[in-house]
Length: 497
Picture (tube, rainbow, N blue to C red):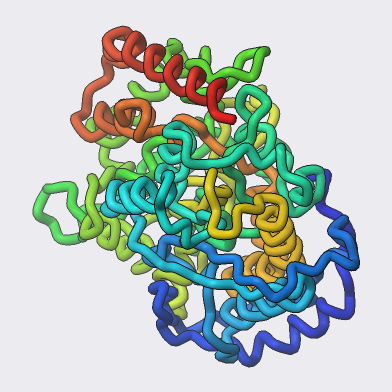
């Protein structure tokens, strides 16, 4: 992104030296340890930015405690680390928090509550009972699963951060695409960026098997020719019935495998948006969502998943998800669409696997950019309408400092040292990760899914799951409900002070 600037060589060398100390053991946030792959990438120097924050140098919060309510079942380390452990990521998070405390003379407090997709309602209920008149107001910042944060915003529990003094959303640690998308009716109730590690881990990526694909895909990407049709061409004729049972199952070899969480990213990568904003800044159904283009993509991928053998959709649920990952990790699929964290979750266990990294394919060569969906589950940050300290400006200073120190510490640890060094085996793959990150998008339909009758999250996925292709007819049946729910959200954002 154009806000990203030149990074510091000193901290680069410091971070590079720390790679040898990386610990792979499992931590409390289910950051699974693995045997790391040795690489020969040229990006062996980690960089960090020299831009200084605009926080006043003499800003002193007097030693008070600012407390963060966070979802403690997030997939990867992001919030609280008790002490340095020797892990690059753990130590970067610990350093970030320590720097914030030192810079602002503040003590960070942490309240962890379950808040993943299975615990969204309980997390929201906890905020409802602790953030009202007469409540204890025991926390000052909320860091929650994206769909949870969207619901909290629509129900009036989050403050418009643009009204605070110290959060500077023009700075590079707040990505432009996030602020542009999250700002609704000129209000900003939630955001993410370098303050979050899970944003990086949950970028949607196409991985490919370098032994099964003999095409120079990097040049194809750089020439803007990595499209759905190119992928279909490369995977044609790839199927092999390995167990000879004449059934398409997870013992076979395929051109492409994926499962439920990565249905929506297929459409979004090809330029389909669910919810966007009109000229006034209000939420609206995007023109592409109910279009013939969406219908065409649905027909094509369902044909590939169900009528042909080269592509394999492996359904929903964690068991099918793990099976999908295993098919690719064992070398029985040319491609898999997954989160950027797949190497850490699975692939690095397979030392002989030679894989590469690509952005999601475009709809056609006329599409201007490759698009990377920030897929669930990501973390969005907000300031509750009532805080324990009743001083939203001081709280905004902590939010700003967390993002700034994340820019300097946690993002280099995750993106530069893990993604661009440990997760890849060539400089080309590191370049692909840059392209993936620079073209990330935040889909508001997924953020506000809970307030939209789950339509954006479930509609296309359900049709793929059921092998149905009547999208235009189906969309006609849901568009009134969708539009009415958007009106409610817009009204709420207009009324929230």
